[in-house]
Image 1 (spheres, rainbow, N blue to C red):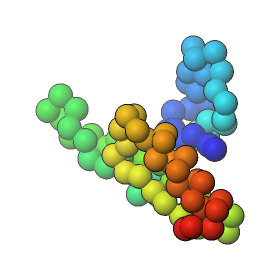
Image 2 (tube, rainbow, N blue to C red; image 1 turned 120 degrees about the vertical axis):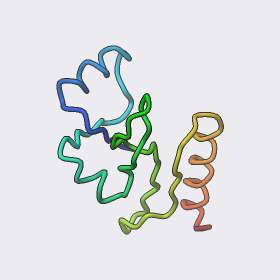
Image 3 (cartoon, one colour; image 1 turned 180 degrees about the horizontal axis):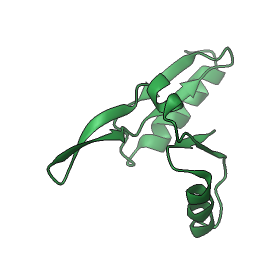
Image 4 (cartoon, rainbow, N blue to C red; image 1 turned 30 degrees about the vertical axis):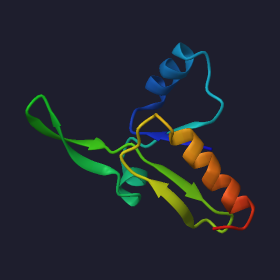
Length: 95
């Protein structure tokens, strides 16, 4: 499991410290190359102004490095259970 954010490493350190740690690495994508590769940069309306932002997304990558499942416009409620069920299906060979 990895997290990716366009924030810099210093910002990540502060975020992780405020949470008292994270159980996974948080990667910095300051040039947005990973976000662009996964097509998660979207136009967003921020107080009436259109800005480029990240559409919260989750990608399940299989052992061959392929995207086995993805979730776009992620909402917290029920998301972890859906991802864990997909991971179990993938591990059981029910892709």
